[in-house]
Length: 322
Image (cartoon, rainbow, N blue to C red; front, side, top):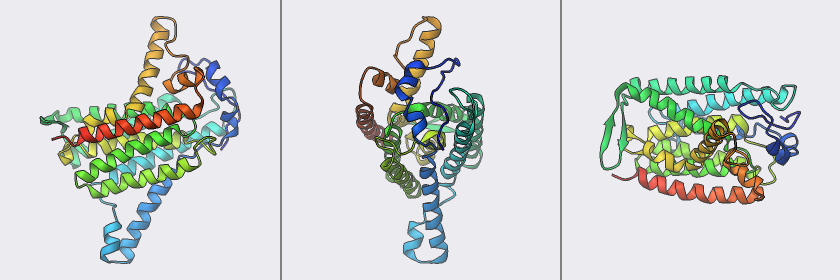
C-alpha cells in the first residue's frame, strides 16, 4: 500500500519540484487506499441493517433498514463502483515501477470510467425516475428535457476534478464530512429519510477514516476514496433536486465550494502558464499554495474545515428555500 518512489508530475508531464520537495517524505512513508474504509464501512452498515430487517421482522428493524430502490440504490452503486475503480488505480500506482507517477490508470481512462458511471446514473434518472428538470428557488422546476443527461455527466466530472483536494493530512476527510452532512440535513427536511440515513452513514465512515487521518496521517484517502465520494455527492445532489421538489443541485456549488475552488485554481494555473508563461499560484491546487507560503499543513486543514462547515450550512439553507 506504499508508493515505491515519491513525487508527482503535472498535467504537462513535468516534475512538480516544489510539491515534491514539500511532500518527499510523506509520499513514501504513508500507506494509501485508506478511503476503502469509508465505502466499505458504509456498505457493510447498510447490508447489516438490511439483513437484520429480513431476519427479525419487527418494527424496530424495519425502521433502521434504509436500503431502498427509490432513494439509496443509485448512490450506493456509485459509491461502490467509484471506490472499486479508485482502488484498482491505487493498486496499480503502488505496484508500478519507474519515476514519479509509478503507474495507475491514466487521467483519460479515469475520466472515461467516471463518465460511464455518470452516464449510466443519468439514464436511470431520466428513464426510470422521469427526471427532466432542475429546481430553482422561487421559480420551480426548469424543464431541460434530454439535456438533463449531459448536465448530469458534466456535474459529476466537475466534482471528480475537485478530488485532488486530497493532498494534506485530514483535509479531504473534513471537507467531505461537512458536505455529506449538509445533504443529510437537506434529505431529512425533504422527508427522504433513507437518503438522509445513507448520507449520515457515509459521514460516519468518513469520521472513522478521519480518526486515523488527522495529522500525522496513518494512511491517505487516495483515489479509492475521492472517486467514490465525489461521484456519489453529485448523485445525492440530484436526488435532492426536482425529483423531491427541492433545490439540491443549485446548492451544490455552495456546499462543495472547497472542491470548486480546488478545481478553479488548477484551471487558472494551467491557463496562466499556457497563455502568460507564468504561474498564478506557487503550487496548484490552492491548498498546496498556502503550504508553499509557509503555512503549517494543520493550519491549512483547519481553515478549510471551518470554511467547509460555513458553506455547508449556507448551501443547506439555499436548498431548502421555497
